[in-house]
Length: 165
Image 1 (cartoon, one colour):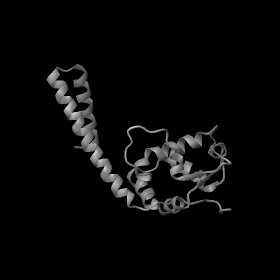
Image 2: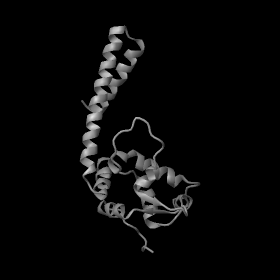
Image 3: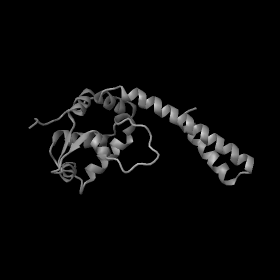
Image 4: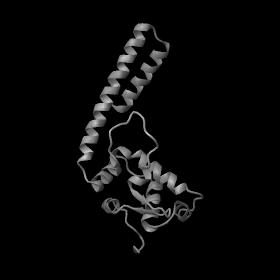
């Protein structure tokens, strides 16, 4: 069953739990538990497969499975071309205000976190530093793309347009 079909089955089971009879609620709960088990097994298989891959291979895989948008390409390019910049400086490079660059970069990383940073699912966790998956942030509030990520991005066609310092 596709992820979309499972989501629909889960949604319908949720509705049944809210409005059904006792036998329907029991059946809906069993369906949700079965879906949870299937998804947990699929996630673990993915984590196991990705854990054996080098960082650069995971980056290539992440952007193969979920191709980057035009905005994401601009966000990455801004950092590749301006290492050592702050979030504000990178935002300004793109013609944006505040720390918009950081929000877009972090969201991009979050959306691909399973591929970029494989980890077992946690029942509860504090906020994660998703931007730190691809880039290093210094105490001086400067960003630099990680070297192994630069190599992976080059393999998928993104390279710095400026000479490196």
